[in-house]
Length: 256
Image (cartoon, rainbow, N blue to C red; front, side, top):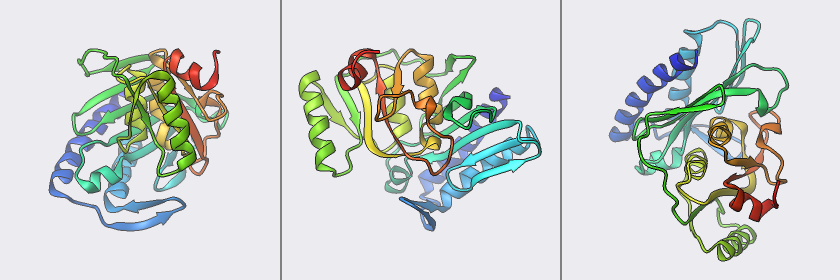
């Protein structure tokens, strides 16, 4: 099923790239606590739902825009962020992803996500996890940039914490506006790590990215340094995230 999902997402991503180039769908059509829904968000999520409906009539669909939908007996699970980096999309910055976690609704936690697809839309690079293994069409070599991807969002206390962390590690700080993409870069070693301790991330934001991190041997924990897979699988739940290799996460949290 997961490869069929990828096929549908690639078609959606090509359409999304065309709409990005045309500046389509940027108007706000709704609000949720701490976020807004734009035409493009609702459009992409609706198309992903159509892909799912074409594959099974028994599923739980947790979407950033539509919330929790149940069809039939709810045997399959889909955790969907249709457009992570929508502010970048609106600003014409080509850094945004589609994220779909797939599994079975058993425990009600992110641990129910067994596989997933994270799709870098502008480049059409996919990162698919199945059976704990990562499959990708990204042929770029692993690099070790001396960068930490961080979300500080004007909070002086968090800014001070991140600055002290980078002073100890001798790194630079970057913020790219897409948590899933930044988590991906940290997991792939294209940065030292990712840190967002604002307590604002939702399961839909990180479902696929934390799975990629696990598949490549990176650590992915919340603000208490507990595994991200333990957080409740609720669209409105909020968490922090710290992702990277043992040196980075160990510096923040201590060794395992």
